[in-house]
Amino acid sequence: MRELQRKNPKYMIGFFFRTIALGVISVVPTFLLVVILSGIGWGKNVVVSTTILALVLLSAIVFAKWGTMLPAVLMQNDKTFSKAGRRGNISFSYAFPRLILSFGLLTIVQLVVALIAAIVLGAGGDYFPATGGFDFALLCTALLAAIIGGYQVIMTSVILSRAYLRAENIGANQNDPVPIETM
Image 1 (cartoon, rainbow, N blue to C red):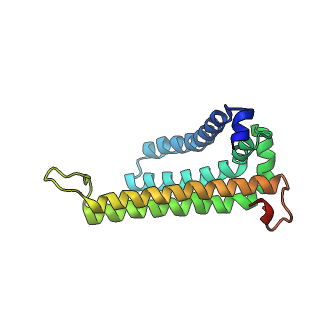
Image 2: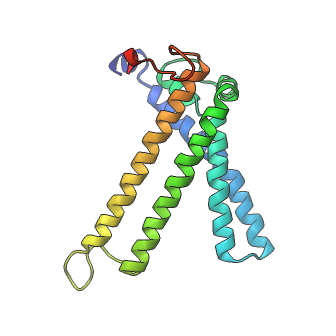
Image 3: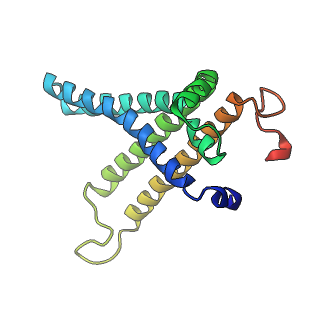
């Protein structure tokens, strides 16, 4: 990692902005969907549920198609959208179902944790209630949600890295794109 920093110390800035760009590409159509659904007059619950589903689906599509540019930035390889799109065409069937799992299932788990906490602890809890003391259960819930979110980031990075390796045909065989020697 230090070698990469010596070569080009600004590579992380490119990584950051490309990640933001992929997020914006995922969010803008979802935002337009919210505007359209709100204008139709559907109920709030339907709009929220449809928006979450659309955001998960669009994020998985966008990251499966162009997400290999993120490992390419770290490898100092061709990190353009066009090259990432070509890699995405090769590895889409590998990355998309796994990203649906990463974005979808873990997002649902986070929402369930938050919902259970709201039901059990009461909505709008404080870490330090006005009556004094400390709300340990709320802190544990927040910690669990953060752990799930961290796992989601790690899982996504592994999926994108393996998709990159698969698209660049790096590895001993197609079933396991990362040989044991490089792990």
